[in-house]
Length: 453
RNA sequence: UCCAGCUUAGCUCAGUCGGUAGAGCAGGCGGCUGUUAACCGCCGGGUCGCUGGUUCGAGUCCAGCAGCUGGAGCCA
Image (cartoon, rainbow, N blue to C red; front, side, top):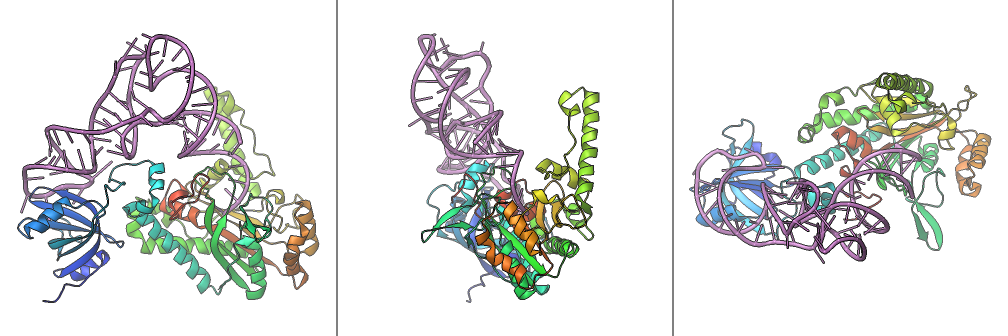
């Protein structure tokens, strides 16, 4: 007799009525004495298997009763529709074999655990349903990003990870020894993409990025993935179009391909359905106005509640960058991502283009704030293309001129209008999956207090 | 770096007024032919984060340290 085909749990419905073999791990086990239920996890999905005492050998029935969680197993049985749930398939077992038992009790039981414990067991936690769903959504987001740029005529030009200088001169970077010289782990591929834009017209890089700040928040990782497109002869408006198109493509792809995963994550997809063109685009001035309306309202509440602290809420000072709470106030006014543009130049990186029409000194830049309080997922803008303004900006920020000579060459040899942005992949994953913290959006998170596993 | 909170069984937690340690789950044994974090009965399981102090007596009160969690700043 021919051995039954080895199939995947994702492929059961095309084998209804057939005898098949599955290989995987024991996810869960339940029993009612004369009937055992086994859930087999194979990396693609989870299949329910039923072992009736009359249907299999006494040895296999005993095995099905005793087998430990996460043992590697191979089962053979017949694919049938679930007697109570149409459209759900289960396997009626004919035989079961333990390929590898567990060395001891599996640490992650199907009960509640604290995050620190789970993060310590991240290598095993990835096997669980929820983490599986998150990683699959992450995969689809990355796939959508790549095809958006690839289909848009972009060339992938990856930036180096070792860099000689602190690119923007603001963040704390990880320092390493590079054959006797100091080198830093990149915090952005941005400057290199400007060189790439002049060489390829449309370019993007996609890789890991590092920040050494001792950040302890739900939005920060020490190592995260960022995609950074840069386009020649594109201005700020074009940049916003590009960013808007990217987010719409990502959300559309996840909604159409990862519905099952979003269900596992209990994500309210109606909020994601809203993510369609056109996103509101508001000037920094208008964002400040929103904040001040909100703060005036807080003062009123303070007066009626007799709360002195609330009543003394000051206005937002023009010229400052928004804090996390400010971003939430602004984005809560809209039901889709909101683009805030023309921030004061002083709070932005030195390479941002100054808007010549505004004497207050604002930059042609944009931050995209995700809805539901997820905050900044994209930051970008038009780059300064005037050599002399750029020279002055580097001096003003007290950055080492010699390290930027190559960058200045881009202005010396055929300078050009160009713009781009950076999208933080983990923040996008957290938003789309509806997660409270970015640590679950990357397979093995690197944070201030976590370097393992 | 700063602010706040937490640390008790493998895991998640309770522990009153300061009086010698408790539950659920997990694990082991037994029962149950449609279970879904199954259920029912029994059993084993503890350096109460560490160090010091107060006290006849500290899981409990005090101090220091460590670890963790959340927030701020920085940013994607």
